Length: 236
Image (cartoon, rainbow, N blue to C red; front, top):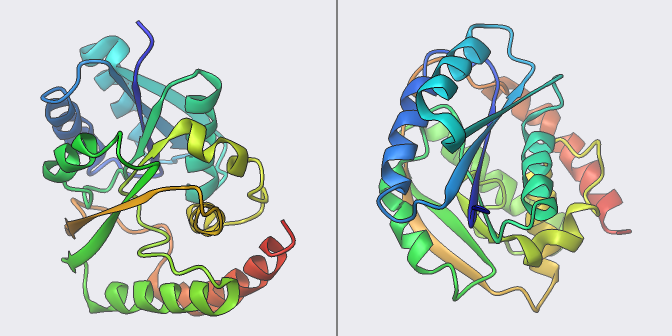
């Protein structure tokens, strides 16, 4: 049976958390639909992540799919997953992260709203990962608004449910070197006035373990890089 939902989960060096994340998400989503697949995209992990995913695959069968690819970055891995949903004709695509910060308890709110909106974003109203991350998100939103004119609620949030048809044309407009590809996609969708956007307040948890791939000290340099990339996006 063709799935109606593809859950896209990029994974990079998350051996401490990936087993728990996969397990809790499969259990929760099965409460609301049995017609789904969780796609784990192993983005060149150098720890035991892939081996753990392969063991989970033996346990869960067709419910879990794995792609093992050279490292391309979190954002481009997301786009890869979104394109797979589009190309396979799967109506809905949902993105989560593999570090445990995405709490599955909110999924049902997104799923109940799926036919009312083209894109539904989680809005991180409470965060357990520290005030620096909160500030970084606020700076990102201000940067996106100032340099793109797009007033995105949370442009880089990993917790998002989208209709594949609604995002299809925009997926190929995101440059292959845009490191925050979810931000680029959010900007393009915000420009499209025909796209209906919904918002669900969520609580963003602390990581289950491991370290983020982009440390807080790198945010300053990445901000300048993002501004340059947004300027190029204006030409799209």
